[in-house]
Amino acid sequence: MPKQHIHKYQTRYHAEATYSKAIRASGDFVFMQGQVGVDLDGNLIGKGDAGIQADQACRNIAQFMQEAGGTLNDVCKLTVYVTDIEYRAPVYVAINRWFAGVHHCSTGVVVSGLADPAFLVEIDAMGVI
Image (cartoon, rainbow, N blue to C red; front, side, top):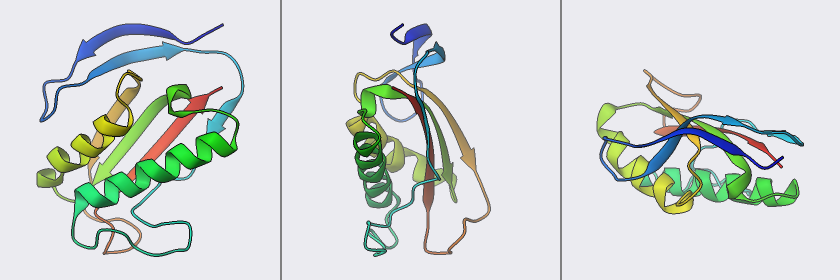
């Protein structure tokens, strides 16, 4: 069964995008650890820039989904952690660029810190292929 988007809606925060309140899916689940602005060689990309860090995190998610046999279209849920409310706008611009047309579910959380003080954003993704 393909993904069934339940109650699509337009976000009202910072950037125009369509999300889903829920998704029903069957198939192979893909869970990954939260992705930050670190490339596969362990280099921090975008020191001090939440938007660039989010872009790198999304690049990682895309690669891991591909390695699992899927694409970003198979992502059902993102949880986005930012260390400052002001980072939401640039982070979601990056996310919406990578996930255009996917209509995933999304939760945004502002936290006091992440595993490394240089990390400004972390994105947790779950998919079903």
